[in-house]
Amino acid sequence: MYGSDSINDDSERTAFRKTEKKYKLYYDSTSKSSKKKKQPRPVDLSEVIDFKAISESFDRNGDLRAGVSKLECPFDRPVFCLDDCPGFYFIPAALSIEEQCRWIKESLMSFPQPPNRTNHNAIYGAVHNLFNAAKNKQALVKDETAPAEDDSVSVDINSQNHRWACLEELDSSVNGDSCKSVSASVLLRKLRWSTLGLQFDWSKRSYNVSLPHNKIPDALCQLAKKMAAPAMAVGEEFQPEAAIVNYFGSGDMLGGHLDDMEADWSKPIVSMSLGCKAIFLLGGKSRNDEPLAMFLRSGDIVLMSGEARERFHGVPRIFTDTEHAEIGSLEKQFSDEDDSFYLEYIKTSRININIRQVF
Ligand code: SIN
Image 1 (cartoon, rainbow, N blue to C red):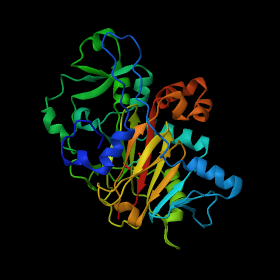
Image 2 (image 1 turned 180 degrees about the horizontal axis):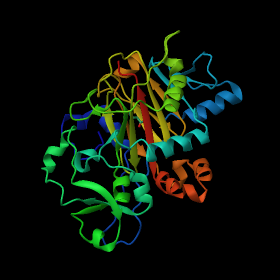
Image 3 (image 1 turned 45 degrees about the horizontal axis):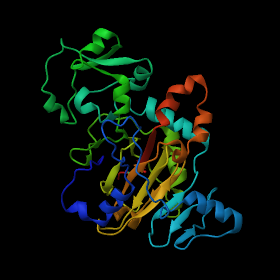
């Protein structure tokens, strides 16, 4: 789902694609000989809906911009809706800074742990302790003594490629042969997704209930149930059964898509943003409908339920520069030496945890 910019078909001409291109990170081309740092191309952000500003203005004087309403509900923080988009809810700063740090840590340390799958499974099989291995400058080393497997087979979600099995000290002999080892820090940077609870099979775009899995951690379940409440029918409780964790670095994007593999679309997807600020696009039922752009900051929660689930959506831009990333509070919270590796990661990254009821 991560976009490349080389698509050259009809999707190139849709309103959604045009808006993606408007906000996507491009660098101004400089001559090869130039020693100047590449500069991101400036982008006009004046049309991006800012729910933080909306919330502050509402707190100050009760004002709301046209098209935005505040949901009347017994919830302990303001929940905003878009008048033209039933089923879409935005909860700005829903997570405290402590909660944000907790879920960033879990997303890096625990969520990529087997039996949860990640994008690395297809090539390397199950990788254990990736975050600590990266922190300790270790490498994933190819075990030449293990039975050879055809790597092309390993794109099958069920395969386990035992040739890439162990993490060893990264020393010059290991590092010198790039075919036989890959540093854990490179793998951490290339971590794109992990799946919790029922495992999602990306190749078939469906849940594969036969794959080994753990239940979604209880604390995350409780949080998702609480946050889902504004989008639930009276008397019903959200049942978190699966989650996809997306990891974004600078320049990454999530192309326009629908999340349509769950049985009951009246149930919300609970989507938590962590780390650097991003732009979220909320389109219509066709890619030809012009999407609305809005900022997503660390701690914001979006709910998409009912009709809103039929709308294309995506993330064309992550801001990793100091001015726009807006992660000052996270930086303070992660200022302990023990947390410095988390800080290093999150300074240039964004994590999204989206939690689903599958059945
Ligand atoms: C998604 O739509 O699957 C994720 C959206 C986000 O990253 O906020």
